[in-house]
Every structure is written in structure tokens, then in C-alpha cells.
Image (tube, rainbow, N blue to C red; front, side, top):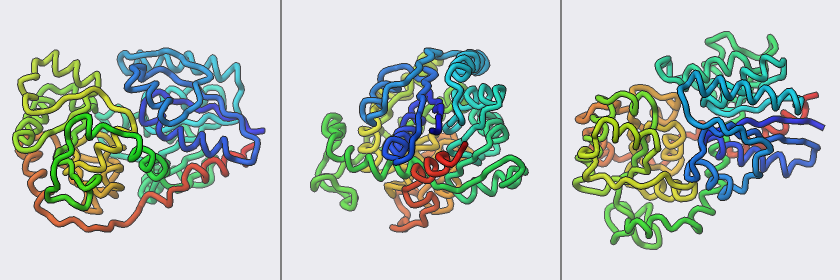
Length: 380
């Protein structure tokens, strides 16, 4: 019997966990998974709706940490995770991505000498001003089992001296989010009604290749939540001004992260969103539907960049660098930063250029979750 403690806390982790947990449940081997939810995301639209849609089992432990500064939040998580791990004594701790929950889980496990398995290991933006970059770096160097989503991620680890052997296992298993989109996008197509609810279905236009029932939504989708953008009033204002200008011709749909909403209010930037249709955060199925039929996507989210790539929707990344360089090399994603003119120009260019219908799949074959589980089964 292999006992795994899975630590999650934020919506991207719920999505990744869903496919790995399903692989665990369908495995013929005996695996016990203990699901620990830190409570980093706690709003219904950022949390519980994902468990309901993805059919995730309810957490065995909900630590109720909530929001706070990075240091305070990570410290409370560390203390509470440690207590659970001491009680459960798992054979391995499984962490995902690059959030404070990821780092806290890795630190707690390392202090107790429990092997750590990191899903999405090896990603690097090389911007250490990003809290996520610090979380990635530290987690990778603490981990024993490093499950990389791409060949580039493996190379990033090699540059830092992390390689097979020396107490480390490094494997390119592919991207578990690709597993997820292959499985859940078909369900979302049936269950999501958000395009109709938002009045986004319009007569056929220039995008018949992504028509839905003979009608094509004609809108842009935006997401904005990274601290580098939301916590910098100048960057935030500049991005909102661009979205506002773009929204004069076609609707810009912005599911607004709670932190972003708070910063818009604090810095009195609501006038910069007059032509932006702000909505509450959406469920995973609704997000997939919005992504699939958008004219283009503007985002600072790593996961959304990849989903745009898989749906073959032009993506404008509102950052100066990305950890998902494969999407940029393919031509489907371009870095436009936070400058208003550059963002607007990037949208115009993306709409003018003929993009390749096919792009190399650098993210595996959609079976990453099974590969991870098969490997963890062998741990004794």
C-alpha cells in the first residue's frame, strides 16, 4: 500500500489534482490518497465549484488558512500541514505548481524527511520578482521526484544541477493540464451555457472554424491576477486602459479575480473598465467554453496560455516573460507586457496574421497523470 498526501489550495491545483486523483482511483494497485486543502482559495467561485464540477473527493483535511501576506500565509500553512503529515505519515507528499500551498507543503515534508513529488517541475520565467518563481525554485530543489511537463523544463533543471541520480528522479511525463482539457472540454461543451447567458452568440462572422452550432461568439477574453500586475498601480492601469480601448469594437469579457477587484477599487480605476464586461470568476467548464470560442485571449495566467494554445486561439500574454516558452515559439502566443499601446498593437497583429493550423505538441500525449501514478506506485 502506497500512501500519498496530496496538497492543494488554489483553483489551478484543483484541476491538476482531478486528473491525477482519477488515475489513482482507477489504478489496479492499492494507493491511499489523503487530500489536504490549505484553504488558500476559499471563495465558492474559486474553490468549491471546482470540486463539484471535477467530481473531486472532498478534502480529508481543510486547513482554512485563507488570505494574507505571502510570509504569513505560507507560515500558517507550514504549521498546519506539518501537523497533518505527522499524524498521517505518508510515504510521499504530492504538490502541484507554484503557489504558496506548493511551497508550504514542500517545506513541511522536507522538515519531516518525507519524499516530495512535484508536478509541473522545472518551469522557469527567470523573473525572481514573481512570488511564483521563488516557490518553483525552492520546491524543485527540495523535491525528490520531479515530474516535468516539457523537455524544456527538464533542461531548466539540468542547468541548475538537478538531474537524475544524486537522490533525484527527473521525468518528462507531459502536462497534466493537457490530460484535463482532453477529458473535460467535451463535457464543458455539453454542460456550459455561459456563451448564451452572456449574450455572446452572434451571427457568423470571420471565425467560422470555431463556430458553435452555426453561430460564432465575437469577443475577447481577458484574465488578470498576477501580483506583478495587480499590485503595481501603473501596470494595472495601463492594462485596463488597453482592455477598455479594445472593448470599443468587440466585447472584452473579464472574469475578475477578487484581488484584482480589490486593487481596482483601491486605486480608483473603475473608469478604465467602462468598455469591459466584468463578471464574477467562472467555473472550469465555463472558462473552457469562453476560451474555446474567443477571438483572442489576453492573460497573465500560465494555465490559460496553454489552454489557448491547445484550443488554437491567439493569446496575448500580459507579462514580459513566460515559463511556457513553447507556446511563444509556436506562434500562438506573444508577450505584450503591460504597456497600453503594445497590448493594442499585439491584438491587431494577432488578428491580421495567419497562424499555423498545426503546432508541435510539446506537452505530451494526454497521459501524464497515468505516468505519474504508475511511478508513485513503485515507491516503497
